[in-house]
Length: 112
Image (cartoon, rainbow, N blue to C red; front, side, top):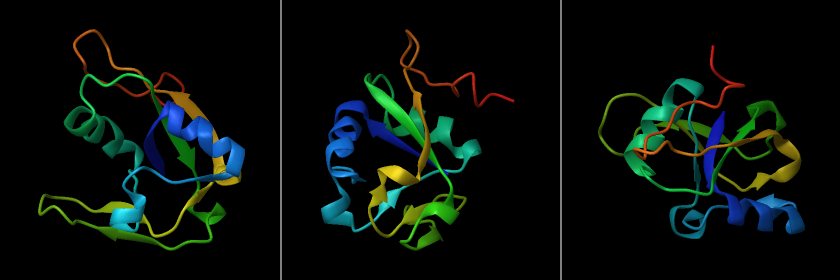
């Protein structure tokens, strides 16, 4: 699974060992994506934003439950992590910058 994060917020999580996005206290879960959902989500919600990272982790490394849900009425189910994300569960932190048009593509290490 993957989560798009602000680089500065993720770096701050390194000190506590726990990552939670800004909206976590309000929403109660962390929005995640499967690999095929990363680019469409990034281009819809983060277009043109800089200083992002793509956090990669395995569900088996998590203690909190993951639910597949569609809360916005569109098509497809998205994984939502109902708890914080331990930094120790993150296997890879990918740089995740948009191009000059503000569009995203998968990091080379993830392109198949």
